[in-house]
Image (cartoon, rainbow, N blue to C red; front, side, top):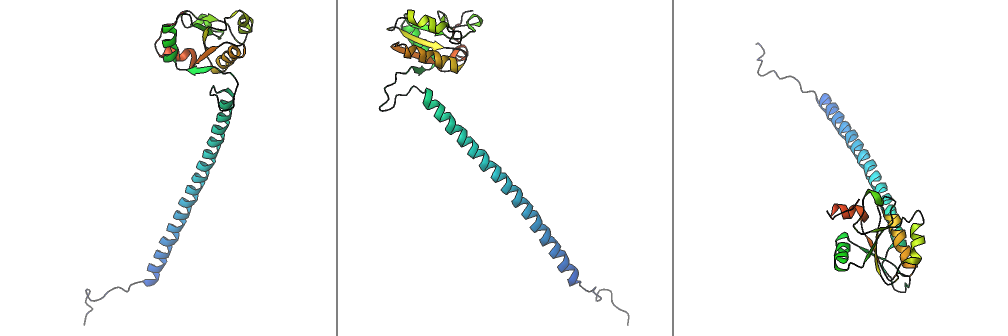
Length: 182
């Protein structure tokens, strides 16, 4: 009798199947472990970044507390008031006696119409303060925050009754589309 090809089945190699399945499981485990490692590393970096950001924000808050114009309970220190460029323009339009003080050395490059120029860094503001009317309202700005903050605080320290500082300074004025002089 000749063997029937249909009835002759090749022997199944269980050993080969188990080795292949084992290799797949080990490979999957290695890949999973690698993915876990990479994700863990990224999570650690994200955590460190978040902690650094929190520390930076805390430092910025501390700096703001030093210069902020909010009067807290028990705080008797006189301070200037930060106002938006829109509020500054509104005040200037409503009261032409307001004195606008540009404390920037870049006055000639452009300034708010009618502003007087006393650059804080050159000592010009310090020289002008004794001649300034303490009962007038002053709006201070610059091309940067630090000189504007310093100038506004100098006016307050000298006894000026109403001192405002434009948030965003000269650039906010320009960005709002308001008129400038050169």
